[in-house]
Image (spheres, rainbow, N blue to C red):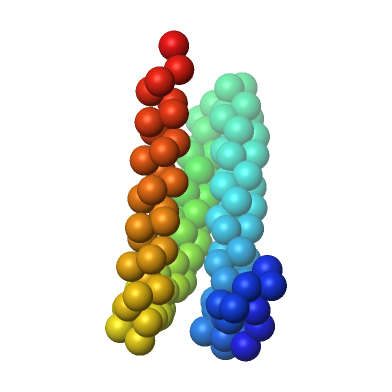
Length: 124
């Protein structure tokens, strides 16, 4: 376990190993989105001057690319759902093991948010 920012609260790296995979999943989704947009844009420009068989071929390429993007997103969806379940289980265990820390964190967060909203409302 390592302390977070010099605090007494320690984190078990094994429990949070999925954080690096979360970053990779986000990068994968971002890369897929950019690649998808670029390919579709190129195909749309190519279809502007296409006729007959060329247009049918471009239409099929668009369909294939959309299906490939859906598959990639489905694969990443499974990873995201799995990480969410792990995080929820960890949070539940943490709250059961250390309820006062969880209550204190909730009170502090609520107080800070309340002060922020109150301060924002007071300004003209």
